[in-house]
Each structure stands twice: as C-alpha cells, then as structure tokens.
View 1 (tube, helix red, strand yellow):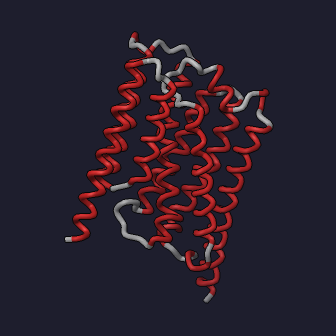
View 2 (cartoon, rainbow, N blue to C red):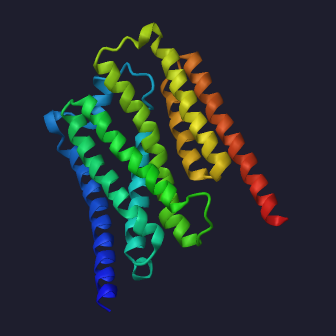
View 3 (tube, one colour):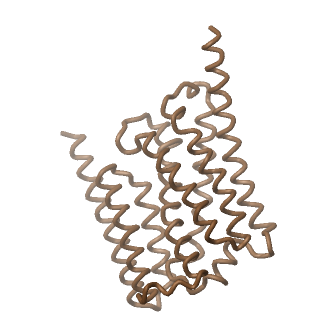
Length: 263
C-alpha cells in the first residue's frame, strides 16, 4: 500500500512538473516578444543580424509556434488526466520533455543575449530529448487510441519537426555570426545542402513511421523558404521541388497504408 501511495505521488509530481514546464516555456516565449532582452525580439534579430542567412524561412512560417503550443497544452492537459497517471509511455518520456522545454527557455535567453554558439548547445538540448520522447512514445510504430494520437503523438511530431528545422537554421546563424567562410562553398549551395538534409530526414520519417504531422511541418518550412527567395530562381525552384516531392511521397504512402488496412 505504501509503495502504491508513493507511486501515485511520483506520478502526480511528474504530471505537475510536465504541465508547469509547458506553461513556463509558453510564458517565456511570449515575454521574449513583448519584453525582449537588449531591445530586439528573436524575429527582429533574425531579420537584422541574420538577414543574409538564406536558410531562414519567411516570417509567416514562425506562426507555427501557435500550433506547437496549442499541441503542447493539449499534451499537458491529456497527460494530467487521472486516466493517464499510470501510462508507461508518458512515465518514460515526461522528464525528457521537461528537459527540452527548460532548454527552450534557456535558448531564448542565449539567443536574445547574442550568445549564438551557446544557443546551438541549448538547441541540441531541445532536439535530443525530443528525439527521445518521440522514440519512447513509439510515434508511427505503435497503434494508440485517437485521443492519445491527437493529444500526445501529433503534438510531439510537430514540435520535433520544427525543432529539427530550427536546429539547422540555428547552426547556420551561429556559423554566420562567427564569420565562417563555408570552406569556400557559396551560401546558396550550403542552403541547398541543408534543404536536402531536412527533406531526407522527413522522407525517412514518412516511409518508416508514416508520420504525416512531422513531414507536413517540413513541407511548411521548405515552402516558406521558397517564398522568401522567390526572386532567386535556383533556391525557389529547389525548395518548391523538395516540398512537392515530400507531398507526393506522403500521399503515396498514405494511400498504400489505407490499402493495407482494407486488405
């Protein structure tokens, strides 16, 4: 009985800490836009200091943070339900998500403080735990209820996909700020290489895990890069081709999955 009580307390604490971490990350994000350190918000820094970094998407793309936080709040409420107290997947992944969310707040501080190399470290501390959460939840490989899928799997897929893209962008910004010359390779070629890497990861995810949410975010970011560089035919066409390719692969994979379920 005592062990059961202690287990319930630990589960409740885990649920509470997870929800608190989500709320805290949201508050820090909002505050950073209304009361930015050193006078410039994250978006303003991107549009000024890093206006020549080609991999940064058009401004509208960052509106996806609204969807990310909507999903995280759904996750936070869902995992806090009494019926989810003993969910083994949530038990294994909760504190990894907390680490990612705390690191996100730290990233905001580093980026606004112009400590861009340290911001890359913080970004990796968001990315790696999120990968752990993704794997622990078995997203794409484990059949779950509709509620768990929409309140747990989809939010994490969206969050991880955007952070995967953001990590590439963050590294590019840090290298640019340090004056890296790209080993003599042009910025345009490096941008195409990074787009190919992001697309390749999304292709692997959709083929192996049939994760439409993850791939959809990559399409969103790639298309936003195409729009930003609409007057640059090379970047525009490459980004559009990659985005369309992802859409086509996703549709084909979805149709095949439906056929398998019907057989």
